[in-house]
Image 1 (cartoon, helix red, strand yellow):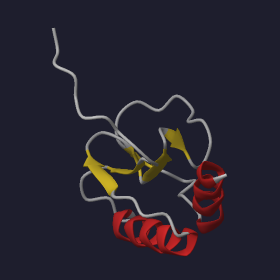
Image 2 (image 1 turned 90 degrees about the vertical axis):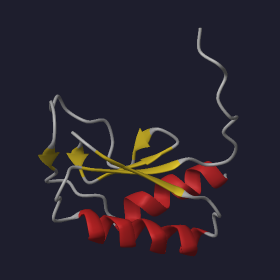
Image 3 (image 1 turned 30 degrees about the vertical axis):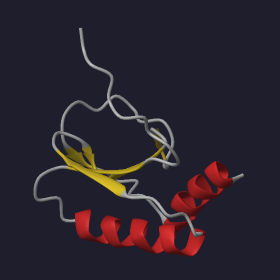
Image 4 (image 1 turned 60 degrees about the vertical axis):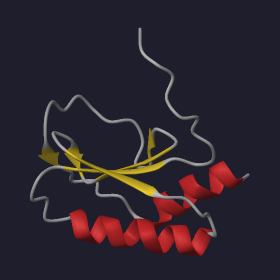
Amino acid sequence: MCAPGPEIRGTRVELLTAPDCPNAEAARSLVAECLAESGLDTTVVERVGRYRSPTVLVDGADVMGPAGSVAGEACRLDVPTRERVLTALAAVKA
């Protein structure tokens, strides 16, 4: 049986990238700028692994919408946009 983990409060923002993703730094900067603009004070959890890269999740939802069936790491053609990240952050503030 697993011990209970810490309770998660507030908005959860995650940045998922594949190793050596050429778009990771731009996505990291985009998320930081959008958080500052939205006024949300939260930590971004970064995960590196076999992900569609880069992916930004806000409370577990991909800001670019549901993903198609892609297995393993792959560069995204629909990289997260400023508008989509801000829209997702505004939705959790409402």
